[in-house]
Length: 180
Image 1 (cartoon, rainbow, N blue to C red):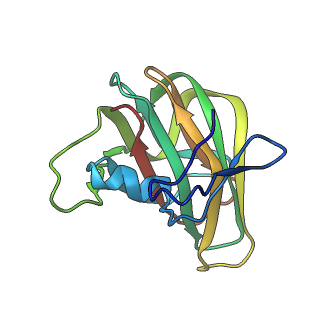
Image 2 (tube, one colour; image 1 turned 180 degrees about the vertical axis):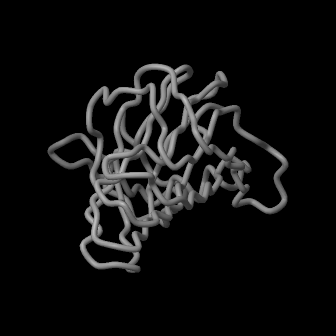
């Protein structure tokens, strides 16, 4: 089977040694495409932990749609390392606040179904494995975790973030819905 142009001039598509079609095309990032459907959100967290190694952010997908965390921006008021981990167990809160996702498509009313909280010291969860770290060596400087693989959070799964420092932590999470 040959792919030929539609003009009748007989131009054929080229394929490389990895069986990929050679083409010149305009592309757009996946999250921009998903945002056209109104399925991209920002979640902002801001809290000061009680002590070092305290969990300050918790996200659990309680809906049926698979969710992806595409990137995280973070500031710390003092030198710290933030760890994003698989969260096992049942969280317990001392001074929690519910966090509301903000749609990045201002014309969309779509929401996600999730438990999203910040707290000064979330307990009751255990580290099921480190996913990423965000070193913040300089106070009040933005650090950006970019991950092309994303963090995929299926129904019933959770992630949390803890800080090695004791100063204020602010983060902005980019979240997309993956199911149609």
